[in-house]
Length: 414
Ligand code: SF4
Image (cartoon, rainbow, N blue to C red):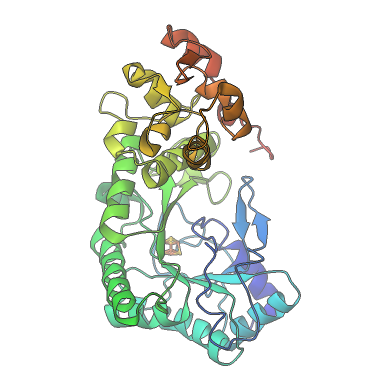
């Protein structure tokens, strides 16, 4: 029998590769008489994974015993690692003790598939339910949906958790079959679809304040473990947002779970380091889909299916569509302003608000937060250019690596 300290060591280490957690400012469970835990004012505590990414705590697995053998996963059945499982009471008490010591702001709970999906899911639900009803915990709870879980179980999970997520893992069925043969696309998309239906039903029947997973659903996709290009990933992302109303798709740069792994599993790719720049560009492209009204086929095309590692995707689009520019900031509508590199949603709103009272100059723009080192080629203020976009190749050279992503410095040696 393992003691609690060994369990937390094993099961928090086993969970650190899942990037799909963030609190998203859910306020659903503070108003229900719960005594502790507020996600809105405090956000969450974070920790750093080996590859330099920031992740939330308390992030644990209920159990790292798993019947499945996903090639990319440290917990796969064939891995020779120490195994452990919590009990519901242990995990609920531990979460509260961590919370009271201000180590964490919420719980992110997933699990290996140690039994039938519904049985595994019931353990996760029991933990959340115990936290809410026995411990009076009002903090953020994110539960992983185990693919293959039935609709009834998803409904129950949504009563106690702020957010649910079912990981899509890989961009295509072919890759899933190769790297995670026990998982199926139908089960994963089925769980997302059931969640989306239940959420719509609950939100419309209870009015504005829904207590069915108020922070919605998200998913995680591993980047670089399989051969798909960014265009396939962005197309998939776009359809997930449209079909299942996902709040977020998280991208996780593939990392070998244990050093030297690639030699033992021929299904895994040869990489020298996790593709963190690619992950970063995918997040930028995702941002364009969600907040800048871009369509997936505007970001990537068949003849250029990978995101540019040296320039952000919005600037790449602008350089390919120079006839759309320059944009006159005193006349353009909100959607058009959003297309200018260096102008974000906040700045676009400020421009619209401020120009009601007066005509705006280039100097005003800088004060409103526009990044003119990128935007300078693509806009005019009262007909005045900062610089004309006469030579796209020259502009490209000047902008390459300016956001620092292509030159990302490693925090650790791999
Ligand atoms: S189902 Fe696959 S990804 Fe999940 S814990 Fe088991 S081996 Fe890892």
